[in-house]
Length: 66
Image (tube, rainbow, N blue to C red):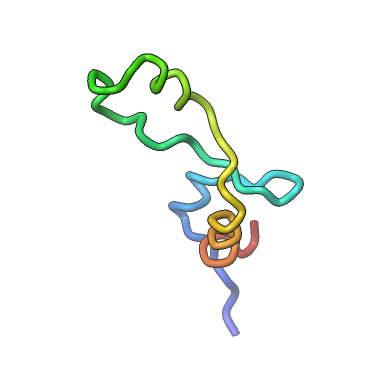
């Protein structure tokens, strides 16, 4: 049986914390800043923890070794 491989795109986008949660950058920061309020731009800085169901799917399908 071959080894399970981590998806290359997933390892660039997601990080798994020590407690097993999945952290990623906020969406909606690439372009179209003129449409968004200053508060939205500030709030999308940094990273955030994904919801538990989303994190479980990421770990199961894309980052089995993570």
